[in-house]
Image (cartoon, rainbow, N blue to C red):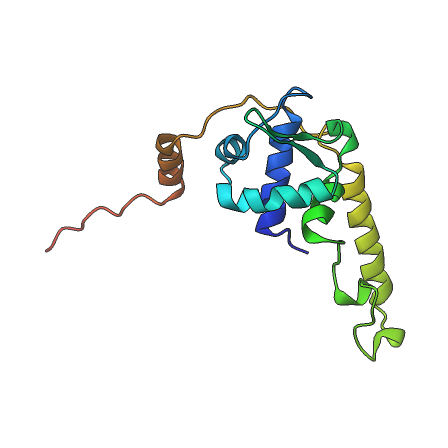
Length: 161
């Protein structure tokens, strides 16, 4: 299983909202800037998070979004299922059968157990469990400096003999 970009962005948005005062409203633009998420993409995710009862929306000139419940009551599973649907490691674990070999498959129970453990891990991990780190703003300068540190140094020109 790989969490999609949409799932990642939704988790980032909820992390941001979980670190705000409970009644404080945040706009999509604010969340997008703070979490380095494309505004238009986040705008498409927020209705899914509302339907999943993870966030609530307040309309109006001073409107925005806030968590629907306390951070300790919202699990990673709540967010991922609102965006991705049910967790599934392999198609055999979905409601329908995946192949004719399924009744004789010796791996089926291993995948079923792995899927149950993963779902339970995400169900028991809440946004209150995350460490609170000092907040800093990622500027273009910091981003460029960070990228430069990741790239190998350019090779020195060699002398001709």
